[in-house]
Length: 130
Image (cartoon, rainbow, N blue to C red; front, side):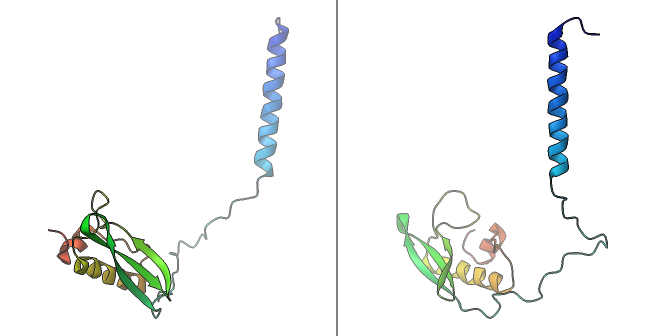
């Protein structure tokens, strides 16, 4: 059938590799499937942090700017070293700006927003940026 013995050997190796691949695929555990009832994922109605002791601390940062830390029950949860949503690594221009955003982030955490992302529009609404 084959005039070149190397061709027969190459086909045998390819067939062997194919068999090994199929065996490995069959040996994988089945994937867990989603429920078929098309129901949305159920989340708890209240955040796990709704009644937690959430506090913040304003910290001096580079170039005469400020950043904040957020603590849950006295343990560091977030260390925000730059003003979120803005290019670069600069901190907030004032302690009050950092405090405004830190308080808003704490409210987001209490509501269950994780991660508590801060948008440019929110920064504008807080008068942190123009």
